[in-house]
Image 1: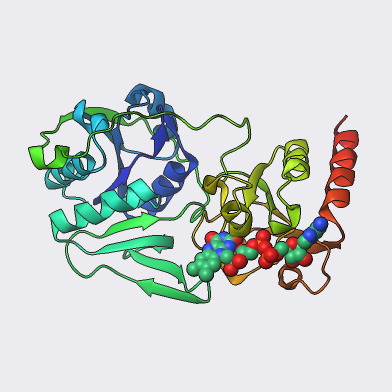
Image 2: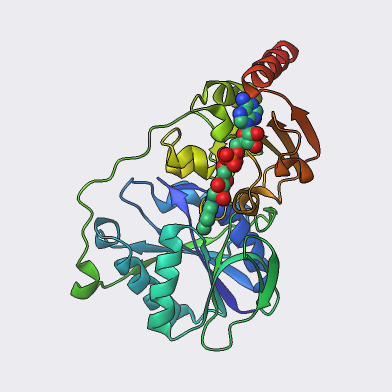
Amino acid sequence: MSNVLVLVDHSAGKVRKTTAELLTIARRLGEPVAVFIGGNDGGSVSDALPALGQYGATKVIALSSPELSQFLVAPKAEALQQVAAKVEPSAILISSNAEGKEIAARLAVKLESGLITDAVDVQEGPVTTQSVFAGNYTVKSKVTHGTPIITVKPNAATPEAAETSPEVEEFEVSISDTAKTARITESKPREATGRPELTEAAIIVSGGRGTGGDFGPVEAFADSLGAAVGASRAAVDSGWYPHAYQVGQTGKTVSPQLYVAAGISGAIQHRAGMQTSKTIVAVNKDPEAPIFELVDFGVVGDLHKVLPTATEEVTKRKA
Ligand SMILES: Cc1cc2nc3c(=O)[nH]c(=O)nc-3n(C[C@H](O)[C@H](O)[C@H](O)COP(=O)(O)OP(=O)(O)OC[C@H]3O[C@@H](n4cnc5c(N)ncnc54)[C@H](O)[C@@H]3O)c2cc1C
């Protein structure tokens, strides 16, 4: 069976859900071989190993070179090129985040291979599915030259466990001077909110322009449900909530079990990031708001009244 390389997406050795999704997809295509690059936030391959084994990695290649964490993405692309030369994989899967896409693009140039980004599904072939033009078109495609390099969006697959005991192979990489032209001078983790990661959360409560800039009721309701907080671009552009929490075409794509949109009109660009949520609930004071075309449940009302009432009720029922 052919090897499929999966670049491990992790934070300080803690494997992200996206990696479990990539490993699940990789098993459809061949034998998943995980590539672990230690970050400048620490974390070693031994921290990641249990999760990689849980989702079926048959082998873990640990790249050791301090240069991989001292510079921006170019050394990582070079390192993957060297791993690919040795492993000769039938495909390479990378998470569709900003860093992953840049690594994938650089790698595609180096390997003279085709690249597909933002896949929402990957099946045998590998044949990928992309959702384009704000979710209005679904495109199926296949790399026709070189090693298929595919970046996969979060929630493209449901992680399925398949216990393995992967061996770890330390792999020495050599990084060229040209890859070392952008050095990291400082790196600080975002302040922990105590809430789940937006792209991984089972429940998300998002606020829009209708919050009027006060995300207090949105956060309180999210906390009562153990949910992540999201925001529309209007809210983010107004400086009411950090950009990292924007949901939509130019923000994060989410697919939780429950998505609550409060004070969000339901513009097509917002929908593009959340319309695959399993259950959608909207709170909007305008009964004609387009978001109501999409929802499973809708509440017509002022979010500053509806959300605190809902928070109180959830808290009471949990007690
Ligand atoms: C290229 C491009 C990319 C874009 N990418 C994104 C993206 O990634 N994500 C995104 O979200 N947008 C994106 N947008 C912007 C998008 O078109 C909309 O402008 C934006 O989503 C609107 O945000 P909103 O729903 O919060 O604001 P509005 O459209 O102004 O809607 C606010 C809603 O709040 C309701 N409301 C007001 N007060 C209350 C209250 N007290 N209680 C309850 N409801 C209330 C109103 O009835 C209204 O429906 C993009 C636009 C472009 C052109």
